[in-house]
Length: 241
Image 1 (cartoon, rainbow, N blue to C red):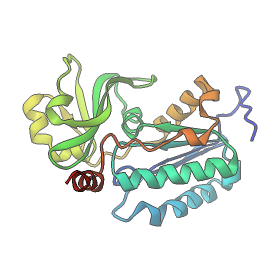
Image 2: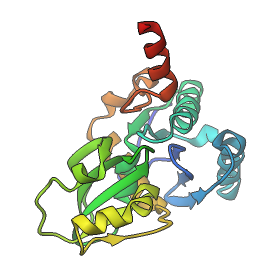
Image 3: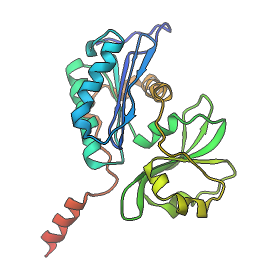
Image 4: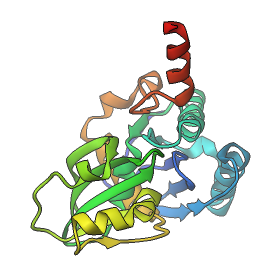
């Protein structure tokens, strides 16, 4: 599908992320955004396609109008990451549109509204660890990476000197809030944070427009797990015996 914006209307963008208990589905069509992002206790595979269909119907369009797809690649839930990435790759292949893979933590950070702060996005990784990243966020600009998305202890997230306010989001921030407060007593922890679609959609569009050639091959977009699953670790241990 050819893409021509001509400075008139933004791209028609579908955004998906299922790496956490927050299911992100948002659609921008002819400059209007429908945000279907919500917390869910169900498997994302049960709800994802219905939610995409609902977003299209709300804007009186179909998936065939989509010009670009953005997808969160993790790190987060291993199963959750695969659901969104597999779905996005399939749709990008069928529709022949660009696919922009983005760390889930960066998507969440792009939805933080603050004039000048550090943002920690942390999802529970069990065993006292989090899938997390740290960014510098300001108004109307892309979050600047301070600590890359990965598998961290809470202490590692605070290894950076900071004179800015610190905001923390994600279920890992809630689970380990006492540890975070001990390391930074001025930190603002936002429980049940649901990222708004407009900032995330702008991020997808900005990344794509910077270098469209980077996003033409859907096969380049892969899940980012940041560590081996427990099943993989157990398999390796058995093979060593």
